Length: 189
Image (cartoon, rainbow, N blue to C red; front, side, top):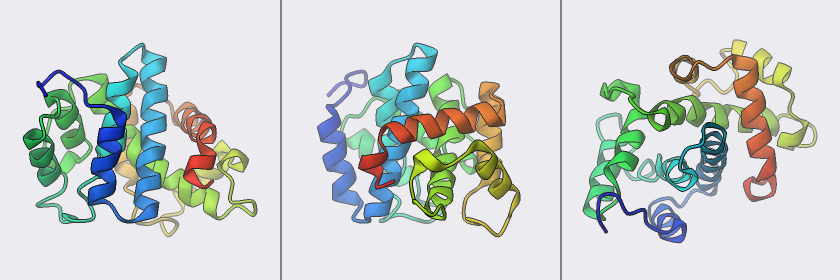
């Protein structure tokens, strides 16, 4: 596989499943994939590339959860498997502590999308219906202010990614909710 050839989605899914046993992490990957694909479509970018970044951004997290390893180890694994450089670079960009400059829209979008998908999932799970379709933008905004709610979600990453892309909070949340609702059955939401 050359550095520009994109592997098939099924190949990436198999890799994700090999490294990720947790159903919730797999569903997170599918959620981020869906929102990244939707943003690629919105910006007129390569949907398959953006979706692959979304799917694989945390594939190594279960095995290498420390800040020293994740997502560096994943990038090394992807490089050894011949995944394109831009995919690996964008995945590295979802971890601002690594210090990579977010150059492309794809690099910026993964940062804006990753934590928000996790947060929206948490908000959906406290809805009586547990359905993402029933989550309102106002509910997400209210919960974002509550530091005790889903405290493991890095809100700064959401805001930093949004600023990079020039997105407003309400629009970003609404867009994310719409993209996640489109794959709600797959996400169990």
